[in-house]
Length: 134
Image (cartoon, rainbow, N blue to C red; front, side, top):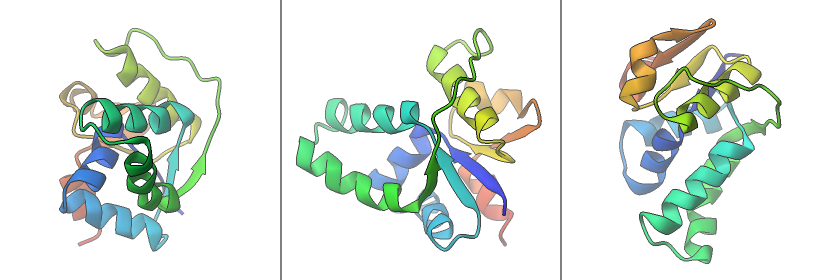
């Protein structure tokens, strides 16, 4: 089964909007691929929901439920990547994808997308990832 990591921005889009990202989460829940995440991403989602979208603790918890249910594994890892992206958070996302041995990293982040491929992990947009299933 194909292993995939969704960047924080994709998981936030799942929660905040109905669209291609929601479709992809549904595919993950149907086990069309294995969605893997890491503590860094899980913490970052909660932070964005409470700071940027001003959700309360309870609202954040219920918003996280469908995401948590769709994630196959949250892996703790020691992979360290530095200096690949301008944003150190993006390096953490790459580290998660490598540690997960992901085939794909799905992101809306232009800096990550510019890499296209990182040590065997293909980096693509949610729309391009969805197109793989058509």
